[in-house]
Length: 88
Picture (cartoon, rainbow, N blue to C red):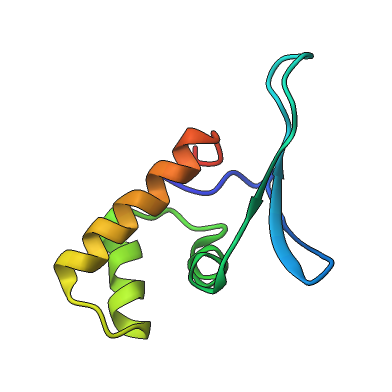
C-alpha cells in the first residue's frame, strides 16, 4: 500500500492537516489533523510502498513501545487512512 500522491500535509494555523474531498457532490470535505506521531509516520512513508510491519518498525525505532503495541497502533493508523481512502 502507499499514501496516494494527491494527498498532501498542509500547515494551517499551526496544525498539520490533510484535506480529503468528498466523493460525491453532496459529501463534505473531511479535515484530518495529524498529531506528532501521525506526521512522523506520514513523512517517513509518503511516496513509498509499505506494509503494516514497516509502520510498526518506525514506531518501535522512535518510541519506547513493544512490538505488540506498535502492531496494534500501526493497524489503527492504517485503518484510519483506509477509511478516508488515502491509501492505494
